[in-house]
Figure 1 (cartoon, helix red, strand yellow):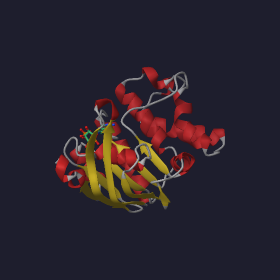
Figure 2: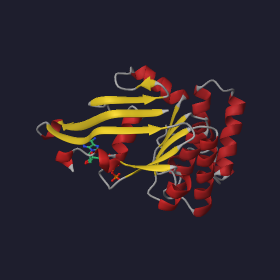
Figure 3: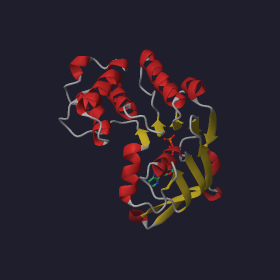
Figure 4: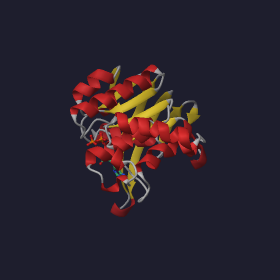
Length: 227
Ligand SMILES: Nc1ncnc2c1ncn2[C@@H]1O[C@H](COP(=O)(O)OP(=O)(O)OP(=O)(O)O)[C@@H](O)[C@H]1O
């Protein structure tokens, strides 16, 4: 479902004399359906950069990234948006929302965009919020004022509301208490069981050991001149 071949990336710092920072060279990675791969490696190895490239936020310098058969290098923005809408889910560490939109709508929105009827989308959103122990009294409020852990759970509910075939998870259990961490690990297990291909960054080693089928070290892709 995710196929990365010979991927390279460097950043050009235009405001610092055009300095070029090579961060990745010759990266290879495959994630199959039903598999969860943990992306590990020291701080600065390029884990977040790789996730952002797969999500289509950063352009590759060279190489290929295919997600569910779609080549991201050279894809038009509308192709990337279509891929994100139906196929490629992403749970980032931080919730980004439009102010004043109630939590239930924030969570239901990915389904509404896919044309799921409003009642069904809201029911599914409500079930996930309840499972993640977000108090019902908060569902009608915007999550902008919620605690870090509450915002993260809203983010996770939104990320799991649609059965995406491919999922990117960036620290999905950080800042959660033990009970909610268990719920998230169960959601990941269920996504794997229905055949989702998952790539995740988990600093929580125990969580990683529970859900990851194998680990890939991003440090192996750091170019020699940057190592
Ligand atoms: N937008 C950017 N512009 C310039 N350099 C960047 C940019 N984003 C990342 N880098 C550089 O790329 C390298 C990899 O960063 P990245 O955030 O991907 O590492 P990471 O493995 O996710 O680290 P951490 O575990 O600390 O989050 C770092 O040296 C970083 O300084």
